[in-house]
Amino acid sequence: MYQKSLRDKVKDIMLSYREKAYFRDAVVSVFNKDEVFFTLPFGDANEYTLFDVASLTKISTSTLILLSINEGHISLNDKILDLLPNLCAFPTVVERLVNTRLENLLTHTSGLPAWYPFYTSNEDFYHILNKSICLPVEENMVYSDLNFMLLGLLLEKIYSSPLEKILSNRLVAPNRLGNMCYLPKDNSNIAPSSYGNPIEEEMCRELGLSFNNWRKHEPLIGEVNDGNAHYYFKGVSGHAGIFADVHAYIKLAQLYLNSEDRLFNSSMLEYAPSRGLGWQLGERYPKGCGHTGFTGTSMYLSKELNVGCVLFTNRLFFETHNTKPTDDVRLSVHKAIVDNM
Image (cartoon, rainbow, N blue to C red):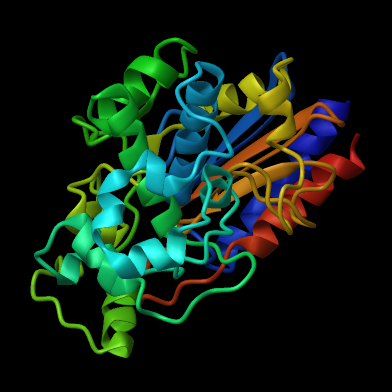
């Protein structure tokens, strides 16, 4: 009855928000460390539909970083200027990042700006970073894509391999995660993520920056929504770009739920306000942690409660661009789960 009751509650919640046009398609799954209780698809999706997971990519990236720490390649206290010496060619970057450690990138306490459209310039990454870093210094915790762009570049340096191969060979294959990849080759079962990049177009206008290669306002299927990931990094970056089905992120969550590794377990604790090592903490993740993606994706896990939830939607896929944040959806589902424990 526990599983059936919770299943019905979650189904009702999802149907209610879908009727209010919070999303077109969705898949939600609830599980513990050993088994999947249920998986519910909505709209045109099925339980094996791939979604553009957006910033859930960061959890795959942070997991790879934790693995590389355990392998002895790097440590949390390493200074980022030592790890990526190309940064040292730019005095402004050196001044800003001189005391920045690997831990600061994972916890978003590096002081880097939240976002910058790298694709508006033809220069290499480090020159554009130098340009973006001239924006005002950010204090305390500021969630920044730039932190995880750097982590992606760091992984490529450590393993002397492209990031998409590192993901496949060092995370997906060894842990049998299944359908999690960059640059998916088969678009036949991929949920559309959005109609072009209207939100980023407006963000660039607000910064007074121009870009002439915007995608048409047509359905994006199998192309990453994130502008920097698509236009600048050609679909592969540490901050965005991964496509996956819910089962892949269920297995990734179960990797953490089952872990006895000290670093993996501590990564889910608070290292900075509302931040673990890669993870988000706070009221939307009762007695646990999780992460969200701009396209409408999220994952939640609680080691204390031995429960998790992966929730994928395509909230941006409205031709009118009348998009709604999915925080209320997540909170409602997570509360239903905890109330049934």
